[in-house]
Each structure stands twice: as structure tokens, then as C-alpha cells.
Image (cartoon, rainbow, N blue to C red; front, top):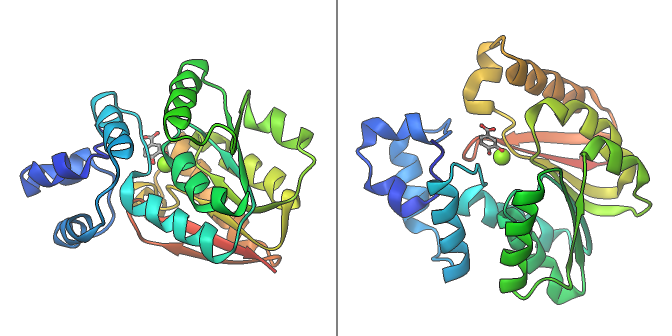
Length: 230
Ligand code: DHB
Ligand code: MG
């Protein structure tokens, strides 16, 4: 079970936390990071609770804030997200860019999740700033004509390598490519043999071998990869 609800997470005995929350840092450090994080509005809190109850792996408030800050500092106007889920990361991103008349395009193949995301995004008052496209990222990406200031990848892990290859041509010079779960619970460092771990190992290798990118994995939550297109 993936707890994205920080209050619930902190209420659990320390020993049980690592099992229920993808985390690669020390528990006491995580506790501290969640404790000092600024409170969210009721909508984000409700979404965190929903994600926790329904096992939807959302990025949570720490990575949410990180994305928000990245989009702000790079003055993003056009953002692309691969993996909408319930719209939690999309709301963080759209809130960063909507005041600058920016807009978010987000892709997901799960129609039920999209329905929930649409409702959440409308409740956030961001429906004009967000376009949701239903379909497989690998089919949709080649059809997109725009150039993006920031691309955030958080889809099924088996599509990461191909989604990466299709994304980079859509990123402007100086743009940011950001990917969630780059450390995959630490499995990438251990050389895990399962399909998703192998895909994440391949993905990280592709990213770091790319001379067009300046890349780093920030060990926040499950590892957030941030690349700047040179
Ligand atoms: C999983 C997916 C995610 O994007 C995430 O942040 C955590 C877990 C998963 O599929 O297990
Ligand atoms: Mg994720």
C-alpha cells in the first residue's frame, strides 16, 4: 500500500513505514520533511486521502512542491505530463503555470482515473489550463506538435524508456525533463531482475548517456530525475 497521505504516514509506527511507502531515505528524515512541509488546501488533502485509501500511487506533497518550484523557476508556460492518474501532480504543475497563462497537457490511458482527474481539476478551477488526452503515451506523443518547457514522466514503468525517447524531441532547449520513481524503491541500485526494475535501469542509463541532457536524480521520496536539455 502506498501511503501518500502524510498525516496517516506519520501516524504509523516507524517500523511499518518503509513497507507502505516507497522511500529511499531515512525514516526520521522523511518524518521531518513531511512535518515541516507547508499545509495544503483541502482539495489536495482530500486527494491524498483518496490516493491512500484506493492505492493510487501519487507523488505526494514533497514531490508536488518540488515540481511546482521547478515549473516556477523555469518560468514554464507549456507543460506536458505523461501519467495523469487522479490529477494530483497535474494540479501542482497547473497551479505553478496558470498565473502566467501557461497550460498543461496530460496523457493517461485509464478512463476511470481520467474521470476522477477531470473532476479534481475542475474543483481546483484549473479546467481551462489543463487538457487531458486519453490514450497510450507511446501513441499520443508522436502526434503532439508543441514544444514544451517542462515534461514530467510518471506513467507505467515499462514505458519509461520509449516515453523518454519520444519526449526529448518535444522539449525546448533549456527545458526540464523530470521523471518520478527514478530510484524505484532502491531496486535500480540493487540490479533487481523484475520487468519494471529492468525498465527503470534501462531508462536511467538512456537518460545519463544522453549528451544532450544535464541530469541528476534527487533522492526525494522515490527519486526524482531532473534533466536540463543543453
Ligand atoms: C508506483 C508507481 C508510481 O508512479 C509511484 O510513484 C509509486 C509506485 C507503482 O506502480 O507501484
Ligand atoms: Mg510515481
